[in-house]
Image 1: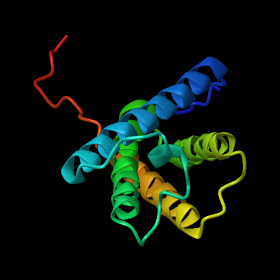
Image 2: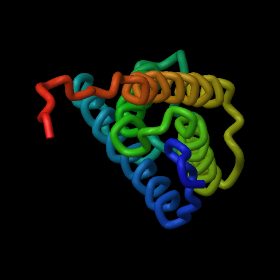
Image 3: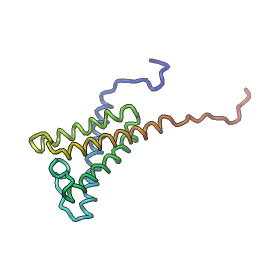
Image 4: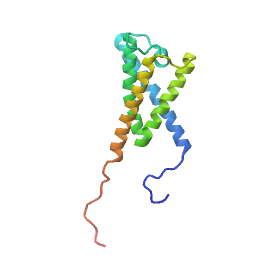
Length: 156
């Protein structure tokens, strides 16, 4: 493997810690976005806004604001991908993993799989937005020119 740029090294501890970190970022910032949105319209905060798929919907103000918080959270998580994952080709993997664990959490919280179409639409849109934005940011960083020192050379 010597001589390969950014050769892949299997490090399960790193991968698991990145997964845990991304889950923490996902729920922390989702809670902050929901608290901010709830503060604007004086809605009571609850775990239902995060885990209950019946809250997300196009018909109520709370549902629309919750969907807005989920969309804003995917942009925040894309920044997390950029800062902590730093590999464009791993952004989709970590995005799907975060949302898969969120789906498992919703399943446990509601005692059944999410059945609302709005929940699936919001999460698919969030997956796409988070993965594409995170990959774009990571690729910009990966493709940045490597500076070459063009200063005066010492004549030895």
